[in-house]
Image (cartoon, rainbow, N blue to C red; front, side, top):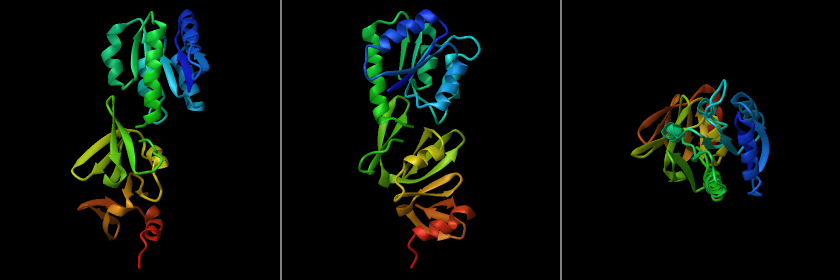
Length: 231
């Protein structure tokens, strides 16, 4: 599990480095003294876990966490200021540690991070492609693939439309598309992905999916018709 330490105090970084060394599964990629350096590192490398201070010069840890959209590591905040706890958990971080941190408390937080990384994702692939997990606050919920009608991009979120319910995931449509089984889901528009088995009819540039209209753009129409096995 690749991790990054971000703290503007050298002593704090040394202490955290020692704790990281307690778990052989953790690979320390770099120690950053500011959030801007950490942001560059996250954009350029595969970082699974962020051990992040909050109050730092320039960009704060909160601002860094908020800036990370589709490429967002699991985050553990480590700070001397307990008053940030509510704001931190509103950012869906896995844990919030108050300095000085004991080794046992640190390792407990790491175990939580490992579990989340296993089931991660705004959507997580599974071995049999029958279901996915989505994150709702700090809860991972299972959804059967067969129940998903279509997905719609809504700014920084993707709305999953099921029969009788909807869910919103903080992710990009492109990121989700890369994790979905290609034999079930098909992109029909810049902002829409549909479950092919749920299409009731095609009327010009519009799909009817469970009595709801989904647009089809010219860019995807020809490829869609090939997939629909038209007789």
